[in-house]
Length: 437
Image 1 (tube, rainbow, N blue to C red):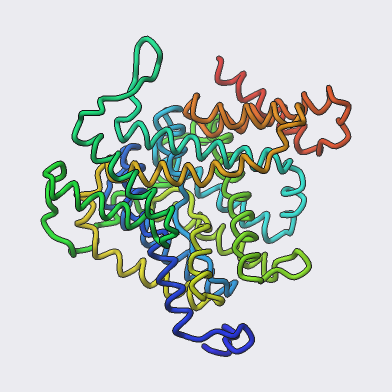
Image 2 (image 1 turned 30 degrees about the horizontal axis):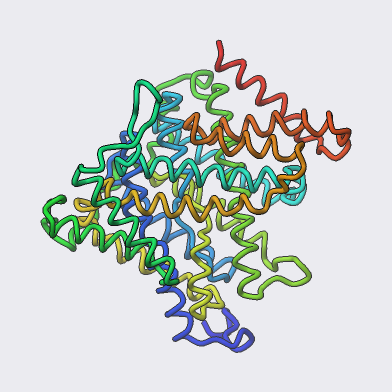
C-alpha cells in the first residue's frame, strides 16, 4: 500500500492521508442530503436517491483513488442535479428515467472521448470565457433555486418575482442558516457548508420548525426505485420517441458541463497539491476515466451526473497527497449510508443555505472573463443571465454558443473561432427552432 501510493516519494504518511480524506468528506458531506432534496423534485424516491448518492460518491472516489491515485473525491455535482430536475424533468417534461438515460449516455461518450484521446481538441474548441460564463451562470441558477426554496424569493403575478414572507418560520430558519454558513465559511472552517447544514437543522428541531427525527442511525434505504431505471425507456418507448432533439441537447449539456467542470477541478486541485509538471497533469487520462465511469455508474444507481469536487482542495490543505485519502473518503460515504433517517430533518429551509453558498462560490469565475472586449462580454453575459431567468442551464449554454460566433465574425475574428463552435452554432439554432414548433 505504501509503495503503490508512493508515500515516501510524496513525503506523506497514513495519518496525513486519513486526516485529509476525513476533511474532504466533511467538506462535501452536504451533498448526501442536498442531492436527494433536489432530485425528489423530479419525482424520484428520496431514500433511494440518498443511497444512490452515497454509493456513487463512494465508488467514484475509490476508483479515482485506485486508478489515478489522486486525493480527489467525486459525488453527484451541484448544478447538474438542479438542471436534471428543474430544466430537464420539470421544464422539458422529460421523465426522470429518460433523464437518467441521458446522464448514462453522456458518461459513455465521456469515456470514449477520454480513451481515444480527443480531450485536448474539445477543450481547445470551447472558448475559455464561455467555460467561465457557464460556471458562473450555474452558480447564479443554483443560488436562485436556493432563494426560492428558502422563501426569500417568491412568485409574483405583477413582477414575476418578489420578496417572500420574511415572517414565515421556515424562511426565518433559512435566513439564520445562511448567516451561520456565511460565518463558518468566512472563518475558513473546512466543511463550513456541512456544519452550517447540521446546525441549521438542529436549530429547526429545537425551535419546533422541524419535527425531530425518529432515529439517527437506521437501515440503508432500498435502491430498487431508481436502480436500472435509466434503461426503463427502452421497454416502454420506440427509439424515435426516446432520442428526441430535446434529449440530444440534454445529453450534450450534461457532457459539456461535466467535461469542463471535471477538467477545471482536476487541474485546480492538482496545482494546489503541486502535482502538475510543465502545466500538464500526470495520469490525467486515468483521472478523467474515473470521473466518466462514475457518471455512468451513478446513472445506473439512480442519480444525476457524478463529478470531481473542488472541496477536495480542503483535504489537500489538511495533508492529503495520494489516492489513499480518496479511499478514506469513499469508505466514509459507505458508512454514511446508515444515517438516512436524518433526511427527515433536512428540509428546503436547511438545504437552501448550502445552495446559495455554493452558488456564490461558483459565481466567482465571473472575474476571469474579459468584460472590456464586447465580442466576449455579449456571449458570456447571455450564457450567465439566461440560466436563472429561463430556469435552464441548457438554454444559457445554447444562447452563449450562438452569440459567440456572431460577435467574433462581426469583430473580424472569424478565424479564431474553432470549426466545432460553428457546428454547435447550427445545432443550437435547430434546437430553438424545434422548441418553437
